[in-house]
Length: 304
Image 1 (spheres, rainbow, N blue to C red):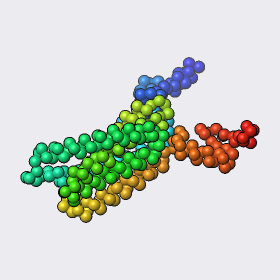
Image 2 (image 1 turned 180 degrees about the vertical axis):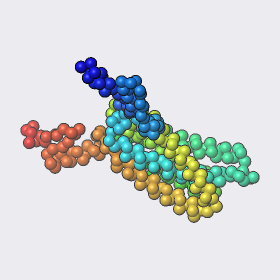
Image 3 (image 1 turned 30 degrees about the horizontal axis):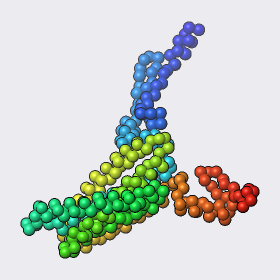
Image 4 (image 1 turned 90 degrees about the horizontal axis):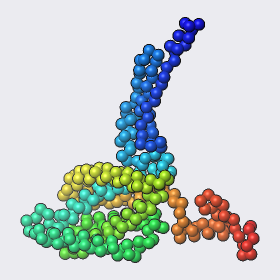
């Protein structure tokens, strides 16, 4: 009997799993530790998954994908792609703008270039204030529309910068119009981003989503600047290549924005969505709001 018990005890082992994460919604297993009766410990771990999870934590919200809405991933992918194309084109437009100001020319003066740059920025700031005054209250309820408008205005602003060297006599007017256009972009993009962040947040994690959005945008900026400098170097002195590259990237930019907006499934009502809901309600006798069926009521108050 004693020998049987000893054999049974020798087969007993302990298995411990090591998990890592900052909360219960973001846990992942990093190692498994097994201890036999002879006190030998065996440790196994997937180091690649551990490193990859660490890298991913810098770019996705904690608890992803359960902490965000289902449309978050699709929107962020297309939004990152459109941001990448924007920063590539920005190198081309900035190069043209600096050339028009006179960078590299002996006849150009520092005070003249400084004044032109100041007037350009001043026009943009003034335009941003006026745009906020007239349209600030409509940005939340029409986030999709203003998102597209913001990127379209940004495209127009960069186009103005690219055109500025071609019209030296109207240079200041063109760059001021371009700055004015981009000022609309800054206001509309920032406001709609705040509304979309609140939409994506399922666990009161809007701050985390906003922070990770900043990390994603920073990465897209660095990649776009690197590719943009390479493209600018390749196309230097070849206006046809510059314009073909710029227009091609602009078309992709608008397509990526369209796809990003199409990914969004907003659960709030604005004027347009309310009109669609009411029209369907009047035609079919029922509508849906947050998953609940709305029955039609006639003029005497009877439910049909």
